[in-house]
Length: 266
Image 1 (cartoon, rainbow, N blue to C red):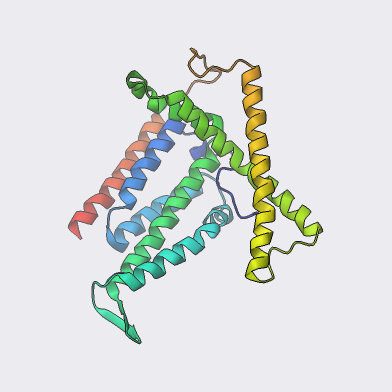
Image 2: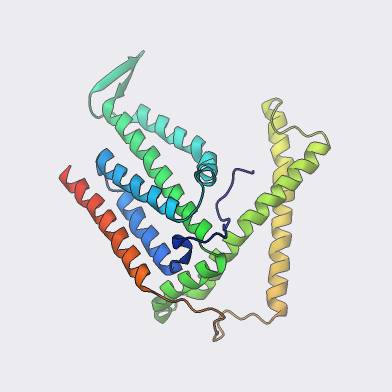
């Protein structure tokens, strides 16, 4: 559980922290679109360099980013193996019995791994460099034009903010439950499959109960303060778009467009 860092804000002074949260969300969306274009290793190299520069400017340690990637390694490996055995394009690299491994499968597996690493890294930088309240304001501000069509922009932004805020709390609660269960003799690392399932159940059920209790407490607190999502609201903090936000958006757009252009050239 200590390796889970998604959703945790790191209060340090950096250029990325001072950027407008609307810019960071928009830049992330542009980046994610470019990631899914097949620009080859040259294009992914450009994007990896962009990510490294962004991580350096955010003053977020590589160790913190690696902790965010670590829980996803199993899914990455699963997808890579799945593609290796199913894709039959390119030249045959080697044969395992009656099973043939193609070059196209290896390239696609490598692309999937690189894409997931880039996505997780950029998302981690966003959540680590932006306060949950600022994310809520940015999401609501970006969705404001949809209010004309009856879209619940404020409610959606509030739900996302609460979900991001609950992630670190639930992880801390899970660690406390694991320590409590371990003190009672529960072993989460060893034992047969049936014993491991019982151990996981002894963790999941109390965690769900705790999550529902936290949600109920939060709902009661909001209701006691007469919270009304449809009421006209004022802002304690207003977002301000500055010149460096425009420069960052243009730079992100140029990098993403260059990668997209490479995908049509290569």
